[in-house]
Length: 191
Image (tube, rainbow, N blue to C red; front, side, top):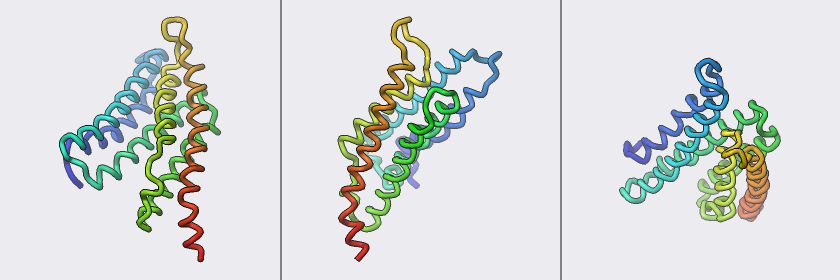
């Protein structure tokens, strides 16, 4: 396992998950609900920024590695899954939406692993559709975590809900895209 700054940032993203979750379990005498929302939003946003930063640093510093390429999406999926589960727990997100997004991530990860094992990983490389889904999701989650109005006019819960529904739709669409890309190989393996 290569020890470098990009991998350290990825590990940090994983290690911050218990801190992120525990914010909502702090007594209200320590932090008000509004402060909990703000702190959780900041932690999640910082994790999202380190996701971009570790990839950028890996390329700029020429510190890319197979281990980093494996760990980075794992860290992303863990922090997103933790956030979605907390949003369901807090009553800010419907469980079926969280299940769609988490289920797709598990399905596509397994599909990519299988395709890599048979030397066809380029068939299920990240698509533009997957990137749009990720953007919608990574904007929606902080809005749902923040939960409060911004400036008295911008309802982050309403906008976040619409964006997470869009992300769920794109999640299903991109999963179908990846499954269709893998289908010829799956049919070939059956014979």
